[in-house]
Length: 316
Length: 67
Image (cartoon, rainbow over all chains, first blue to last red; front, top):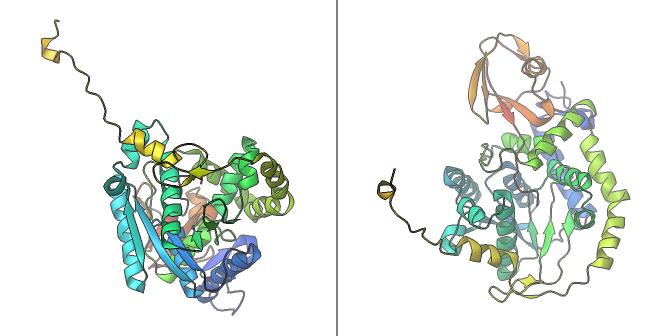
């Protein structure tokens, strides 16, 4: 196989582009596709201060690396979730990446700073771990961006992530979610702007980018995500992609160009909720307390002791 | 050849030589969700792997929260 650009030996074949690339031109392709997404969806302006949500995985490190190479002022923000060795390892990868490049990484820890971790907090609050995790990260990223005066939060969501979310939303006809599913959400009602610059790249491409750039990332999957629907949707979409290269891109980008605005318009008509500051943390919410503070309250509530006779005192 | 797989981590012995594409087909692994790595770099589908090659087949699927 030869590189489509320079005719040198290729290291990767991208069937949806019907093309092969050498390392140099594949890395350039990833940067160009990211820059194109930023421009296509008006994600960032030159000079913007950007806060990158960093997990230590391939996507967040890839997007941070690309933004740095594209000369954006991008700092990282890592949240320790308390998921045992997995969290310890993810923190190490994020820290090593930042230190090797002289980049600023801010950190926060759920247990240290908020009194609970994802495994215990989700059980206490009777939420699925991924739900408690996502809620906590969204809240803490928003808060960090507001506190630090950043222009935008950037996440490493890629084409596979967005196509899988779209598949889930369509399967259940979550029209409200479909109206809000976009690669860029502008700042509104106290929430900062959010951007997903990797939406034009597949998961395989972001992983390949990391290998070719020498970015050491956490390969192991989160133990709490095993068996969740999001991963199952991704596997189904990759089966489609195997027989029909480009299927994921067509599915997601035709949704954006031909359908998303219809759901967004309907959602805007319904969306007349007035937000107010959370009584505890000040985050915008339509209740007295925001979802994160409600989760924190349930997750840190003392568990009453069940008093009774010791087993040996129970009559046989 | 030695083949390292992840999630869960395991090692297989496969008879070679074999192309990368044929190796993935033999193991019924979808190339759209995996990378093949030899000596720290990627190898494309038409590369022939020798009988004494050591390769890693890495799944690229990740993500828990659908947010």
